[in-house]
Image (cartoon, rainbow, N blue to C red; front, side):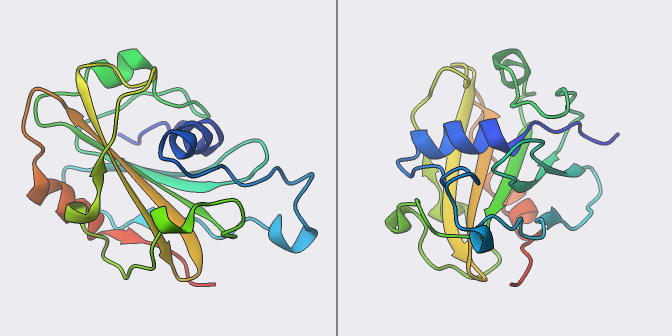
Length: 179
């Protein structure tokens, strides 16, 4: 079953704001050469994982991909609802990866240059915000990869220790396009 994915617009804007970085300026205020949408990230297919790619339907156009080790049914173009995150199974994992073509507007300290594969051990456990219920744990990993800003969000069930090895196996399958 293919995951129906939420828009990176809302996810990226809300999560980037919560992570201490700022969302990039709208395409209306960005120079034309920065408004170009980069090729999207993806996950290499793996047994037991459901993946999908999406570009947000509204500016800024942010290519994203999502992977989960259980079927997720989030309406296309929307961030997962509290209800969706509240029902992550005991060993359930949802990983999103979004890519911006410009570093403009981002706190680069929160997005150090990193090589693939990204490491779960370098992610930070984030404070909950309204869209993340108390039953979910949220990790964020910011990076600059191939000249792009990359943000990876990892959601797990709060009542189960984060299955780091399983998360890492999916992070190993992230592909970020080169410029």
